[in-house]
Image 1 (cartoon, helix red, strand yellow):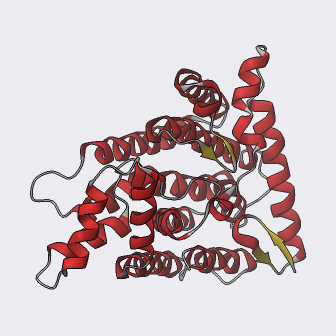
Image 2: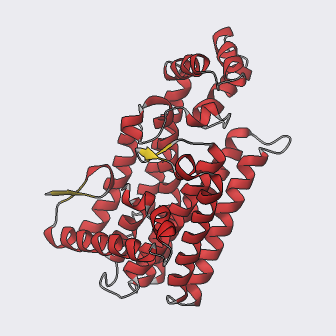
Amino acid sequence: MTVVGPFGLSVRDQALEADVQAGLAAVEEGLLEATKSDVPFITESAQHLVRAGGKRFRPLLVMLAAQFGDPYSPGVVPSAVVVELTHLATLYHDDVMDEADVRRGVASANARWGNSVAVLTGDFLFARASHILADLGPEAVRIQAEAFERLVTGQILETAGPRDGRDPIDHYLDVLAGKTGSLVAVACRFGAMMSGAEEPTVNILTQYGERLGTAFQLADDVLDIASDSHESGKTPGTDLREGIPTLPVLRLRARAESATGTPEDRALCELLAGDLTDDARHAEALAGLRAHPALEEARRDTVRYAEEARAMLAPLPSCMAKSALEGLCDAVVHRAG
């Protein structure tokens, strides 16, 4: 048994392990090649987050989904590179919007070089992803374009907030489906599609990815509150400081506004609504959320989406790749504690 991929996923089959490891190594080479430029500074900024590492969650899903067809098909590795480049590009942009100082345990690109360089580097990565995508055929281009539209729509919806009368939690889950679920779904879809898997299998794996992606982001929400920077690779409570309401905050607000809401609930909400750029207030808010039942509710939401993802796999034949995908559901839940 060897541990590969994010969260220490255990692969108990030597052939599958070899395929996954070889695929991820090829993706790493592809990422470095795709982020090279004739301009040395662009290469440095574009490879900044590539070299910082990361879970390579999406490429791993491409490799596992490809096991339901021919995992050695020529389009599998390039499609994984496309998905990861797209993800990396969004991180550059996210860090600018969040004014984040740390990403993957290193200084964020915006902290190191400024917002303009970070945004333009993200654009550069999108361009390189599109260049690779063009060789994968018009269907792949269409799928990526639709996912990118959903991703951007999710980001805009997050910025705009819920419309009048819309439940904030339902709105937020829609945001996550766009911002995270869409690209994770594409990773599964590309892996299955590029390997030549049958259409029903492609559809099942796409639906699995959609739900797993949401669970993955919900686990990140919990980690942002519950972990330290060593565990998460970024500054804890970043979203709190920027006033971005993640699920634990939304669960707290729902409790505070309900008939059973307590004065302590409302006091914590008032604290969160204040200026959290002050380090002392930020630390107090973070400690309050860590001790509040809303954090446990958010953990339960994570479990629910992970179990929905697992249920989607039921029609697929039993195999080691299916077991690994089920194991990812467990791993996401474990991340959330």
